[in-house]
Image 1 (tube, rainbow, N blue to C red):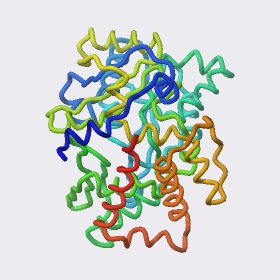
Image 2: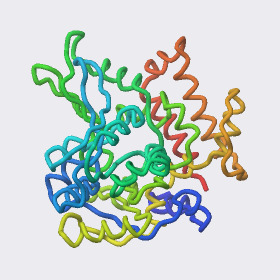
Image 3: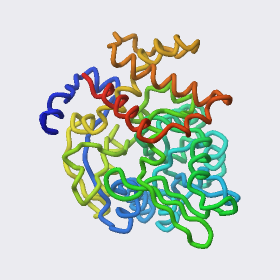
Length: 370
C-alpha cells in the first residue's frame, strides 16, 4: 500500500466537538514563518513566536518578553531558565525546543512581579493557566500583561532523561558540556552537544526524542493535563507534522489566534513585514497534530488506564474509550511508572534502540487509528 493511500486511510475526521474539546474558542488560523532569515533559521520551527515578540518590542507595544532558554550548569546539566528579553539579541537566546522540565511558578512569576513595564509572556499551556489565575486575582499583574503566546505541548520531561543522554554523549568522563540544543534544522531536525575543546556531537533529534515520545520520565503533572493547544493564550503556536510538508525547504509554524487581541497582533506583525502568513483551516492544523493532540486531550483513556496502576487521574470528559486509545494510555502510564521505579529505571537505557524504535512504531500506529 502506498504512503499516500495509507495516509488517506488513517486520516481522521474532526467534528465541531473535537475542535471545541482540543482547541477551545478561536478566531483565525494560519501557517507562518518569520521573514527575517536569522530568526527563521535559528528556531526549531518557523520562528514566528520570536518574530512576533521582536515586532512588539521594536514598535513599543511591550517593554519586555518573558521567555525561556536552555542553559548548561556546572558543565554537566542542561536545565531551563526563564528571563525577560528586551531586544532581538536577547530573544534569540530563547530559540530552540526544550523537552525538559520548566519552573514557571518559582521563576517566571517572580520575574513578572519584579518587572516594571509592559510585558508579553510565552509559556506552555499549563503555565498560562497558572498565569490566568494570577491575573484574575492580582490587578497589578493584569495591568502588565499585554499578550500571551502559548506553545503547543504534548508533555514535558523530567531532567533525569537529559542527564542520562548527556552521559551517553560525553566523549570521556572529564568532558564538560558547554552547549546543548534539543532540536534544530528542518523537519525532525537534529540535536547538538558541544563539549570543551570544541568537541561537537550531532545526533538526529530522535536520539533523545525516542525516549521522550514514549513518555519515559514524563512529568507527573502532564498525565493529568488535557490542554494541548493552550486554551488560555492569545495566540497558540506550534509545529505542523503533515507529511506533505516533509520535504519543503521551509519549516512552518501553526498559528491559532484565540481572540481579537491575538488576531490583531498577528495582522499587525504581518503588515509590518515581520512574518509571512498562509491561510490554514483548523482541520489542517489538527491533521498536523493528529496523533499527539487527541492522546493528550483524552483524559478518559488516561483515567481508565491509570486505575490499573493504582493511580487516580480525573476524567474530565467522560468519553467512550476505544480499545486502541486505552492501549495508548496504558503504554503511557506503564512507561511513566517504569521510569519512576529507581530499582529498574536504568534498564530503559539498556534496551537496544532498534527495539525502542519498534516500540515507538507500535505506539504511534495505535495513536494513528481512528
